[in-house]
Image 1 (tube, helix red, strand yellow):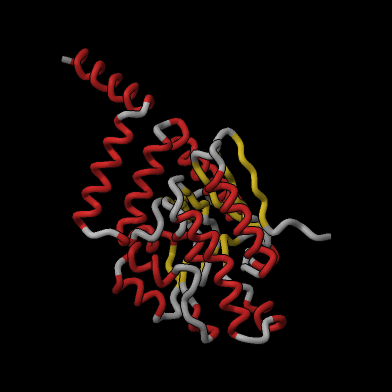
Image 2: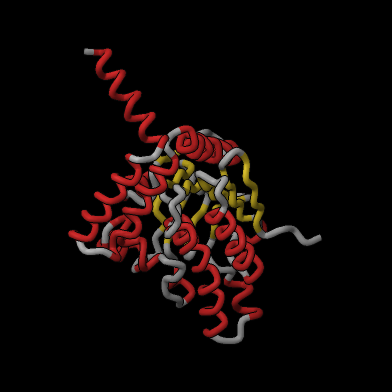
Length: 265
């Protein structure tokens, strides 16, 4: 029986994108790639979505591309390029959006799976998680935004260390490098996976309870900064804070803060 390669739901402002090829460690094939584009485009285009959570079924977050399927059904490099181009549309939808994204990345994240993790703005992993590049193990080079986003996340020297070695970072190494934000420790692997999802949900709901549109705009300013000069970035920041100051939400929050500060004397 065929199962959907991605499960997508929206509940009270939270869009959840669940990678659902657990038998292949959620590695991308054509079906998952096209479902990924559809889910990410819907999540980032809906007015009722204020936060996005990416998680996965099974014992891994994402093992990148499905190497077995590449070997069996893809006849040329152009097939691989076409598949990467499809997945990249979803990565762009998330990274260029004005909606904050949290990843619940339990278990293994490898190869292009790093790119899926890096298109989140806040990543939670389990204490038993492992993260690495491993492209060169099969004679390939980074894709799915890894070469674009890894160095921005951890610095160029560390990015080179990861892609030039057959190395898997432990969860705590990934946290110390700045690749992930939090590590959850909960005993057994199945318990850890549940705890990682629970913590990611807590983060998403904290955004939704707060000024989620301001969070989203802050994310967008940082994500889009490389396309602007320093002076252009200052101008964009000034225009943005002015725009948000005029919103009803900001007026209420600024007023409440000022009143509380005055009351404290």
